[in-house]
Amino acid sequence: MDPAIYNSLLLIPAAFFAAAFVIMVWRILTGPNSMDRMLGLDGFVAMLQCALATYIVWTLDTTVANAMLVIALLGFIASVSVARFRKRDGS
Amino acid sequence: MTYQLFVDVASLVLILAGSFLVFSAAVGVARFRDTMSRIHAITKPQTTGLILTILGALLKVTGSPEFGIAERSDLGVLILLVVFAAMTSPVTAQRLGRVSRREGLYGAAADMSRNDAPADRSLRRR
Image (cartoon, rainbow over all chains, first blue to last red; front, side, top):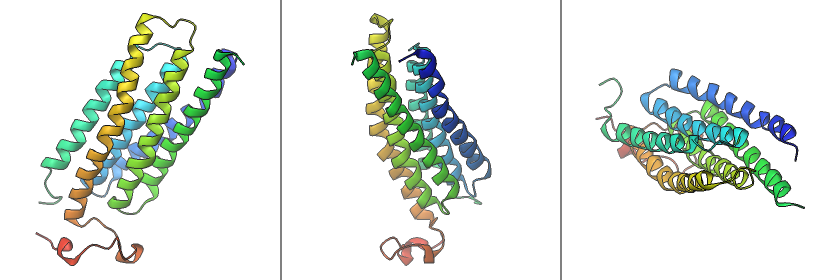
């Protein structure tokens, strides 16, 4: 397949990830309680990994794979530790 | 059908499916009404979309023209990411679900089926 056609078809996942980015940031900002903000952050981390994978496909430069690994580790540790050590809202 | 064409089509299909699943998970996070439902949206479609997208990227990197030693070592990192996504998603969902259950973040009782309804004990406040 022609790389120009392939890269222009990659605009569709990019639009999906941009919409998911906006929705997740909205959920993080306006979550009713802190668990919703944690959920939004969890989805945001996974969405960021998907966007970086699409970047790898777009540029065929695999340097970003290590950054994806760091993001996955940090997101997992962050959500688990917040769920472990959080206090109830309003206390 | 050359390997190049096969890799292009397969990776495009995988990435399109993965991005649609990620977008549908985001829509679920925006539209579901309580925290327990949002945990459902954030674990299953999101992790499936992540795994599909990474598999598509892995296929595309395999078929790229400048596929050498460095790209081959980064393929291992991508496979590790797939394993890691499948490993950490149940743990996160269990922790978040446990905290949400203990705090009674269920939403309206009329929205739930009978099996999902919490026991009275778990709705008690401190």
